[in-house]
Image (cartoon, rainbow, N blue to C red):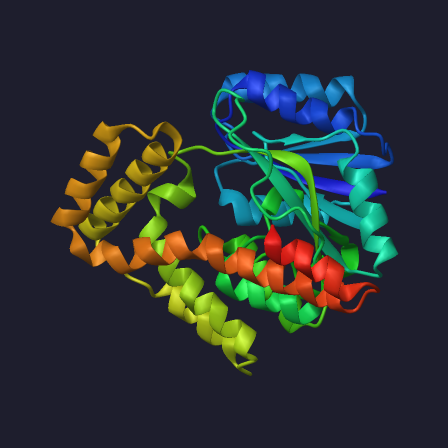
Length: 332
């Protein structure tokens, strides 16, 4: 059985219904969906989730007495899970029909402990932005996984599927605000679990401009730098990193400026309007300290592509007719 963990806070019923339905109609049907209502004061959400749980016995509902946050909610869900495997699902995303079946097959075929997949980006209305966010090829080599995770967190949280033993050994999530998923991935690598990236798109990932990761972008960037130190195998990294994050102080005005620039950048990337680029340029001019971070974000995609490309070339070199195949790759 696969236990799927979901936390709900302020999603509207239509989006939430679509997300739950995408699990209910999976080709793989040996699952339980554990939903944590972390917004008990919202009677509309509470009524909706109660009805869903009554209609489907495979849906287990936990209603928190008060808001306790994503980390604690997911740990609560895990504590009552009965499956041999743990999967994640966000309340506003959509799993494709064969997601669970294909991920479980991928995990077993490559003898992995923890897998995550490619996604297709959709906006708040459900419109698709592009076919795939990441390269559409598999990555199971430990060194390559470590290298790409060291550049950016490509392990989209709602695409996770892992053996239950991973969650047990890591004792669930740690209290790392806005980066608990990145922290979990790095701790998994430090514990020598075998991770794999499945290049096939298996989930539609809803990109919300006002999400937590966008409103705390400066804080998240600095947290990520701390977490990435864990890939250097520092012995006391766990305690050090938690202490660094919990004692971090971010200037609210700087955070607002940085987040505003990032959101304008997202708007321009989608619209390509001249007005958006002027507003973005003006904001950057007023806050030049953001320039290094912006350049870094622009280069991240190229770095990820380069890592995948080098992996692809290495695979081709080990196959017959190397020169012919290599020529095709370089030419393309």
